[in-house]
Image 1: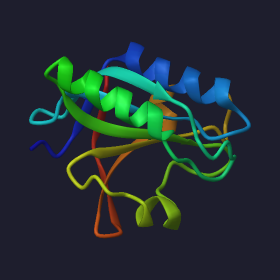
Image 2 (image 1 turned 90 degrees about the vertical axis):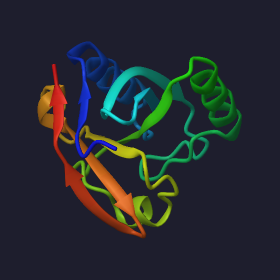
Image 3 (image 1 turned 180 degrees about the vertical axis):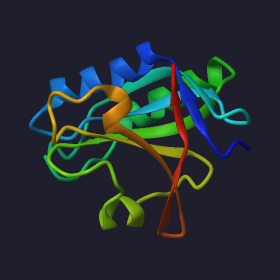
Image 4 (image 1 turned 60 degrees about the vertical axis):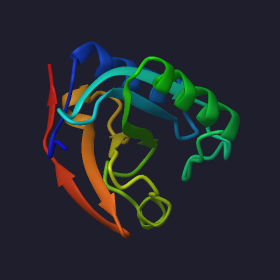
Length: 140
């Protein structure tokens, strides 16, 4: 299993565009690809069931549909994505408490600076047993 996450610039742009479109609520979704190499190749946007600027829950219907789509494409769940509308791209206590996929990366974008580029606003994390550690993120 890779200790770093990689994605194309176009994919990173899609994440940020989705996050901006969902303002003032947090955006969320899943990324698929190859977990062994840590390469995300597709973004699967989801609805935030909480419709909140400070927390997110991937809508249960979307979660089931997306997981089946990922499995049907014979890909892996690589990352779980969400936005922080006004705070840094660092897992909050709630993010750490509700992280139930220890093999997946957690990808957070901050929208605190609306003029920042994806490479400046996206950060990748591993969250296990309530503890988070940042991992390298390569965009391009």
